[in-house]
Amino acid sequence: MHEFPLPPRTEGSRRQPCGVCHEIVSEFSDTASWLAGDDATPEQFRKAVAAFEGRKLARFGLTLDSGLSEGAMVHFNLRFADNGELCASMDVDSHTGEVVVQHACG
Image 1 (spheres, one colour):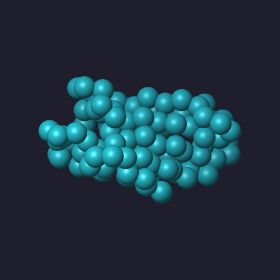
Image 2: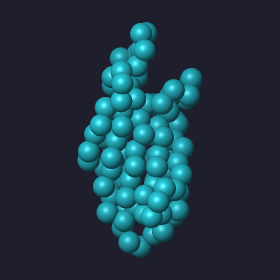
Image 3: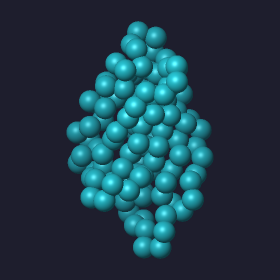
């Protein structure tokens, strides 16, 4: 997993939710790597990851949206449910499971 930090959140950012975000991104990466492979199309992979992660994310006050990128890449955005702020974005190769993460909070 490659991580490229984004600029820190503005003043008043919440440390606890950001800690949860970092932890969830790590778990998300494990799940995405586990579900990846040549057996599914990128769209099937996108739907499987969203279904697998959806309930857990809701428990932690997060939402996940996604879309197809070029080739086998799928882009996911992890957001705080209460205000829609971006927690992290992830680009995942649906065939290899490689995940590139950009954290939006500190």
